Length: 212
View 1: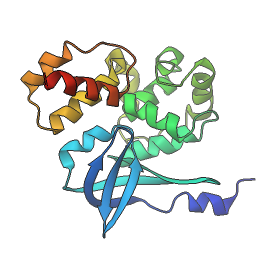
View 2: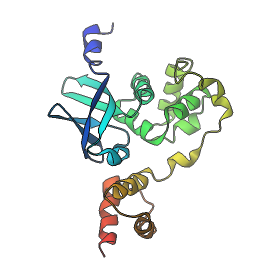
View 3: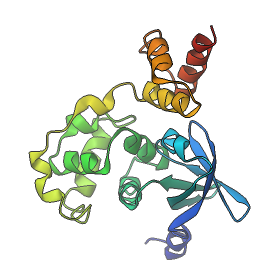
View 4: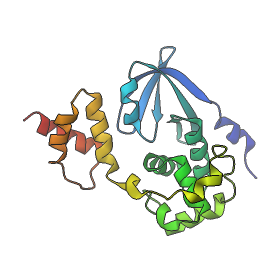
């Protein structure tokens, strides 16, 4: 039986409105009434252009014995999809954030509804077993996802371009936020390896090249 007390603890906040004061590879800090909240989010660098601006962050509070963490999203649809994903056996908050970092909620829904295991296994940390579990647990339960869009999902081809080098793209966004021009970034981008690097590694290497 589900512990209703624990369930209520996990859904304390709907959103936080405040100023983005810090953007890091895994989280952002949003200040509200003098308190800086560290919020884990799928793509922190999309908030780089909003530093010192009032922003609404839809949040989910995750509670376990050794941790209380806030996870944040640009839209209520992203938050809704995150909650659906972590309900699947084998997918935790970190895995759900990784999936949303690479795909839009509607793309994830489409793959599940179409039982497209091949597409789902392209997400980080999702193997065949987890992809099958996502389909078993969620297919037919996502009808309230963005009203009016589900009916046409099966006519929209899934696009593999979202699985290109995501860390490199995040690094470019971060460097743009730091003030580097598109021309400067294009020059160093061609010198960066298309390897399995972290966003932080790409940023550090790009800065080294930019300073030459």
